[in-house]
Length: 416
Image (tube, rainbow, N blue to C red; front, side):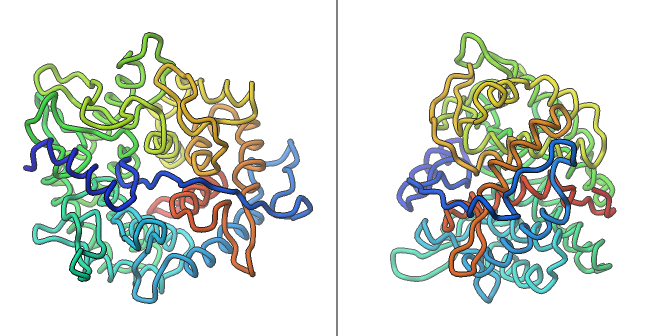
């Protein structure tokens, strides 16, 4: 296992490449959001008596922006390129493209992205190195072979979804091959309880204990994995994920009055088993460009499985809904006590934050989707995109938010 010092080393690597140190998520550069004309049928306000988002409108936007994303970010060989970050490729970016292609029934793109991923990111032990790009000598290959557990689980889930959609047994075999490696490399045992660590580098014996990124925890995926890989207790990972999320959201961490927001980073104390602050990561306690994804992942578990744990967690996290009622806007970064650390209006985070509203405040969700997600739709030279066209992270997360609200993020069994 890689010592916790790797986290600091990874931050150094990220900064050297111009990538923000937030677990693979690229922090947006200064940005000017392009918006569609007010008369656009794609961004017109939804009738308050209607569904959260009209399925036909959502489908049109999602398909148009997927075509635009392929034009801007996916090369002909299946590599997803982050143009703003020295042309690097991440396992996260490959996983996002696989999920989107599977949900939109784009088998050609899925096949190319998966082929490139396994040929270029897969390491000797079977996991996926998280960062690929250009070395100082001009050669191109893995820059960091350590795993990012969210990408590995998203890849496995995308394979399962694609296998069922296209009745492709070879893709189901590929998914099954990923899971034992994911468990062996990225799951840490603390006092007999398994926790998803942030990657193979994060499971070791440094203090205070294994590093976890709450936004990597994906209970809906572990329920799927339990059926594909019965050799490992994936359902125990469902339980530990909700336990960790609830504990760290409720904990004071370094705040005197927490508001039940998950932080960007945390750790599991190796001695006590408590989920605590992670002193090694920047902006660890903040609800920011990592943590906003928690709400989307938990809402997906509620959607797929009607999970009581998901519904209870979302019901308890009322801070964002109150902020929306008070300000009709959400900040991209809050402190653990709820104070605003970054007051920009960034469509990226609404793509995850909408998950907090879908089961608890449908009217708020409807308003948020119309104004902040569909409202970010635009076209440049016939290429559809959201907001800042070359912001890779924004293009993905606004898309995911609309897809979730529209019921297009279907489970492997085909149910929304």
